[in-house]
Image (cartoon, rainbow, N blue to C red; front, side, top):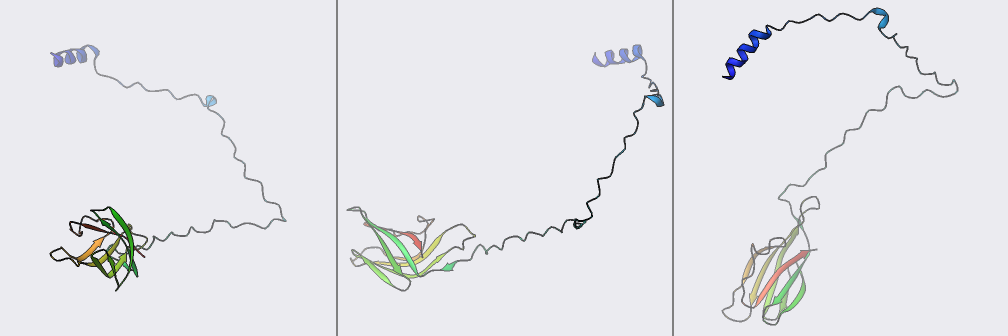
Length: 164
């Protein structure tokens, strides 16, 4: 039905014809404007550079590789006794050890990320308990991912707070 209406409309209206547009008379056009040159600088003023100095290219910042770590000398640990809720902050030097109640914590390395990468710290800890049949720990611990590798002990929690 729609196609029939369009066909009838074309038959009634006929083909479209382009009508020529007459040109405006010459006296109706605006006169061309005159552009004046800027005034010359005074004679006692030294001429400036004709072109601005070339723009200096900005060098992209040098970024550290994503797997780079910087060594540090001391680890800061938070140790908690889950039974009596005591928390203590301990500083352990690399190559040294510290005691907390029945735990002995040895630190063999502590590293941080460079300043141009997301902040994080990693420490290699060896944790032993003087009581028999208690679990120990000998692995890397990360500050930003404490649950990734943690001491699974019924009494104690140990968390890396940072390296300095």
